[in-house]
Image 1 (cartoon, rainbow, N blue to C red):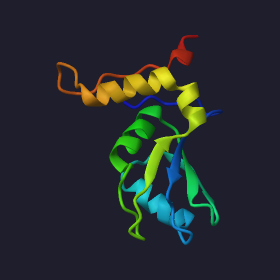
Image 2: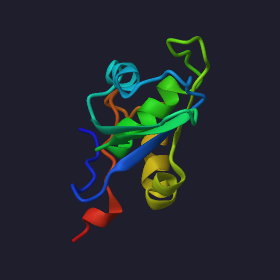
Image 3: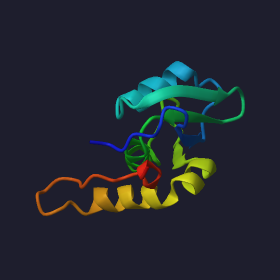
Length: 120
């Protein structure tokens, strides 16, 4: 089961290289084809970038690995990365999630990644 971030926080994925005509619906469709953990989409009109808010660091890391470099509906190669705030806040957890995705455990599945902030 993916690591869930507390409801007062969210995980942000930065999208770069967006076409000026890209809409929130375009991004939602693009991202939802990969993950159901999306909570919000923000597009900077005419800015060529946006943010997708997700409720799971594991899903966010998976999205960056799967979608970075993919082509959008306008034949533009997208940059999909954890936002700098998310990378700073969840750096160690994100690194663990990334390693777990690349190295399955002996049962053939991904090990759970625990958020260190959950140690109450």
